[in-house]
Amino acid sequence: MGYSLIYITASGRDEGLRLARALVESRLVACVNLMDGVTSLYWWEGRVQEDAETVLICKTRSTLVEAVITRVKELHTYACPCVVAIPIVDGNPAYLDWIGTETAP
Image (cartoon, rainbow, N blue to C red; front, side, top):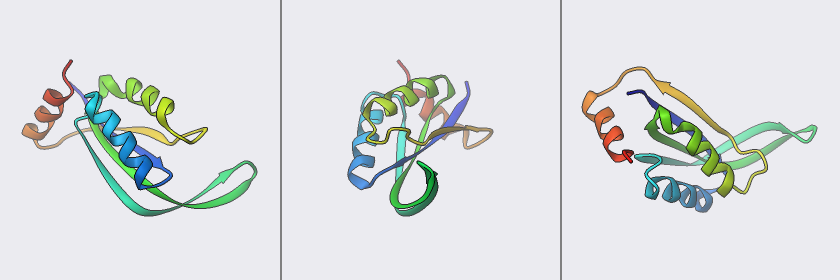
């Protein structure tokens, strides 16, 4: 079974918590870490933007990545939210097993 980290940005802590809770409660992800105080610079609508954001790092099974992306797009306030998956190539076997157990149907 493969596992992935999903990196998401949110407009702030409140939105990050709302997204995290929805993903964990639905068992699409086993765990979410929230990091506040991130400054993001990016191109949007033809100019450089600078915003404070909250970063979410989610742990899940690779087979659930598409479902996570779909759910985040449904719930997110951004028109084009950042939701990217990074494969986990190795790790603590017991922790990876825990991710699998907590995201089991």
